Length: 367
Image 1: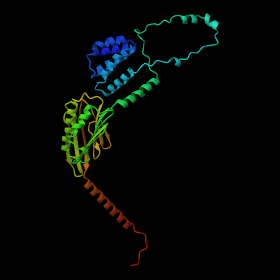
Image 2 (image 1 turned 60 degrees about the horizontal axis):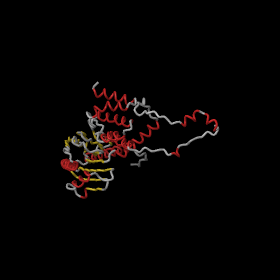
Image 3 (image 1 turned 45 degrees about the vertical axis):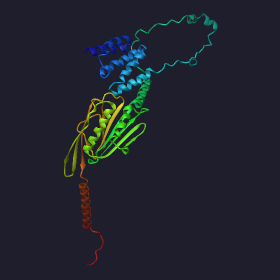
Image 4 (image 1 turned 135 degrees about the vertical axis):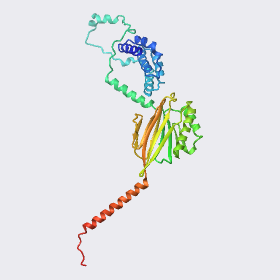
């Protein structure tokens, strides 16, 4: 067991026993050694947030949560934002008229005056300072609290996830005339500076008819491009995006070849999008939808690639090399229709001969 695992194990034990200061003292020496971009750094900061909250130091908990909002993991950023809202929520005081005092009239005043409880109640209340003492083993939450927390997390996930979504559609149903759509949508009140910069520069390679924009969406449509031109056009968009966000984005690589058969052609594609340099844009989701003319075959399974009928839904990850391989058939339509017509003619001829063989069962005229 290495030093990290040993310290974390002791800190978790102290945290479960309510020894928050001990947990903080254990984690502080190794806190700076693990960045927020690592899973170890995330675990340490989550335990420190709980410990600081336990000793009522919300400002330090909020500071750690702000560090977690820069994590490369989307779910960590979402949880951190939810925790910041909870920690910054005000403490509501209970009004006096909400408290109900029940007086027992059956006890006489004379009895009250001689009871020792009355004398004790008049004395000064004594309090025990439990601020620095362990609170004991943490008790589990009730089912109602767990359900409410889960519902709140789902709501926050829906509101905060995907504040900027980039979705591209690549229509390959006509390989000689490919259609390309780019849709950038935002949930913010105003568009981000890099979005406005991108929209201004994209006009240099597109006409006004191909672009539509409003307060929340930007749509670009390009039609009738060949396979080589679509490769060049997408790389032009990536270069504009690089200038807009100040990050060097590498060109997309679209490799393809075809195999000719009597009944049609089979196309093979290998697409690679290298986004290893894109790591500093939070709340950004990128998707590519690839529309194919027939059923698609994907040799390698990938949890970020989903196949819906003839459409590939591909989620693009920041800081990664995204790659996909697939193939599909493009049938010879003229040959298929010719085959179907010949089949129908053959079937009609077969039915006609059968009717002649069976006869009509009508009386024959004398010869």
